[in-house]
Length: 442
Image 1: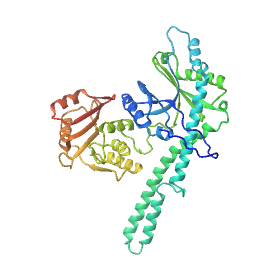
Image 2: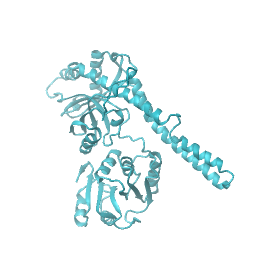
Image 3: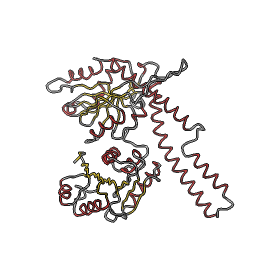
Image 4: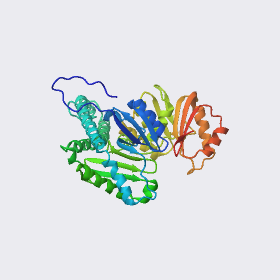
């Protein structure tokens, strides 16, 4: 949410605060309600509406706030949203003319959108630079101070530490250095992509110096009539004629996204090159990060809660939960060495080793007291592929015994008919939420 501008005197410079702008996000099937709630809560968004796979909203939030969206796949600045193009019994030439009217009928909306986009990126760059100078005045990378302190401690204690202990400490320092470098490299790659977008946006002195490319998605009747390449070519020619921009398919200043189907015609500008769903803190991907966050949000995690994922896999659910709600205690369990190794790598990359405890144990043999867990969240690895049977009954009974009477259970499944019959025959009295793929809430 933007703050009231502060008068810094005649020397103040830089772009104005973000204007109230119209955006849309793409979302996985069934995640639209989660995203609608999130943009209202996190961005104080207004005029929130959705169609299948997309959520539209208005906000004056800056890039730092927009980047925090967790249930969105990608974020776009909206240029146009209108009724679909008519395809039936119309010649291709007429349809091409209709496509070009997306640009020619209202060029001012395009120029306004480009100005907002440039201002967003420039303001984001300035805030990023201020943040880096404020949090890192000595220009050392994250974690470097801790490594230097560890090395200093080792040097001071050389005389009294046995040789084998000294070697262990050196090995630990080396491992921590490698982990820090891996995390810094991933973070820097994201920052470099963002910086590259900013530089490309502000490099042209005039809007007619912009280079661009067009990305198209066509479905429904128009998708059967035209290819995405044909639509992209028509839109590209119209943009060149209208604004004097030049095409650059490899390294453009600007990308234009167009989605045409039987329900709508949408044009937008991707705000970030890297999708929001591609988390910088997840090294080994498991469950989709947006689904994991949605599951954690259903659990309504409170400070001090004991949260368990008894089949944690790579730990994606726990990672998303701990990042968003850090004041709880998290435990993940799994019987697979490879899954736990991936989860451990993710915890290190995310800097959450002290927030999440991992156990190698079966879900039906959890070493926890009865009624000790506040919240259970899990992506059940069963369904059509694994054929639910007596295992799910045992799992539910174990969850029932370990969870508090007032506890919550959130599960994700790929098939609902059989689980629902199991729930009817199982004495499951807790607050229960089930996400089923394709995602809907039961």
